Length: 274
Image (cartoon, rainbow, N blue to C red; front, side):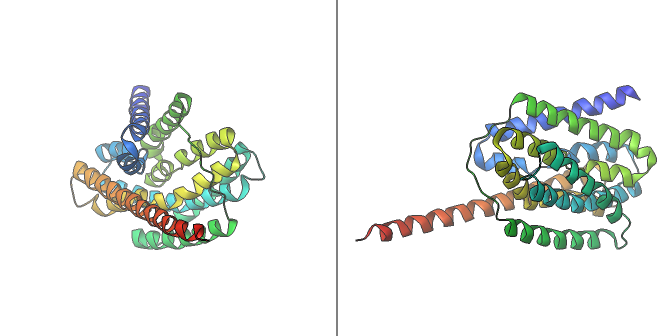
């Protein structure tokens, strides 16, 4: 048992660290797409698909969808409190919001489509609330140090190994919920708050709300295909869906940036006229 846990922990940590390093090496276009990949959900479901039956995977993936809805509340809670509280206090409060929300959402009937509708509704509320808070958008050049990468990798590795080995014995609901815990947002919020202040941390965590759609795509495709296609086909199609959504979100953001720059360039000569 211990050897299995360690193997999963190390494998997941290597994936997380490897992807995080690649994001900085591949340039803004490919790096931005890769940043949206399911670096925690991916290893978690890779192991579960190899070890668990299809009905287990379906329930776990639905539980993950519900956990992702709760993650929107995690993000909103952190954004609302990080300005007045310290990093760990605001993250602790956000986690206390996430746990009961994730448990409550798993009790809802309706399957994956209701979960998807619920996610859309909560995302809309979260985006409206984020705009109402009028977050500052500071521009910084921030790079992840090795300590950040190792910490993120170890936390993700512990989460995946526990969720797919120990928690799996308690059933698919707990496994799916654990792999959906926002370990990435937790570590990012913590390190950015400590290094650059609450404005940078709040803006970054708030901006991640839309990017989570790639994780929703992964969990949705996994839930729909687990009992239809072979395990590895399910995994690859889910990963492709996640990368596709991440690519669309990234290209959309790039178009918005270009339009903003074009408007600024067009307005500048007008401002200079006597």
